[in-house]
Image (cartoon, rainbow, N blue to C red; front, top):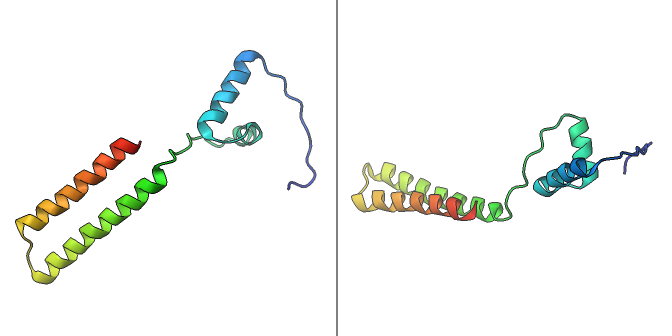
Length: 102
């Protein structure tokens, strides 16, 4: 809770309120939070999609698999065409997931 809070009455016309509500909707913040951030000069960014967490976990798993393939290739001093195709497919999967979820 904030200490020594002061209240300010702000009157907005319909267009201004509509603009504020649009910022609230895209940012995922409450009106008060949006106004505070704007007063402080903070750049408001759109709220990330809900699927972003799932996407990041999938990308992390794919990156882990690619790292394992690279480690295996370095340890054996070579890599087969099949392993290269496997790595390429993992990258394609990652790109597909990004396009589907964003």
